Amino acid sequence: MMMTRRRLIAISAALAALPVAAQANGRTAHLWTGQAMGARASIRLDHPDAEAIAARVMGEIDRLENLLSLYRPQSALSRLNRE
Image (tube, rainbow, N blue to C red; front, side, top):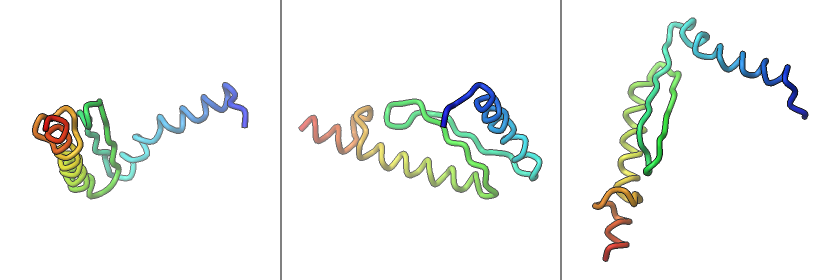
């Protein structure tokens, strides 16, 4: 399907309205921005348990970085490369 200017504007307008729709339902989206695996990352959650889900996700990112990160000197991968 060909992307026309009209289609791009329609899609952009729909995406711009998403946060407004979430607030209309009485919920606000939970947004996290930070570093993950040495890169900028962001996670947006629109769920009643967003805070709890975000905490679990951050724990999993931390666990994976402790294993696989080249940016943490004490990660398993950094130790393997060093030894």
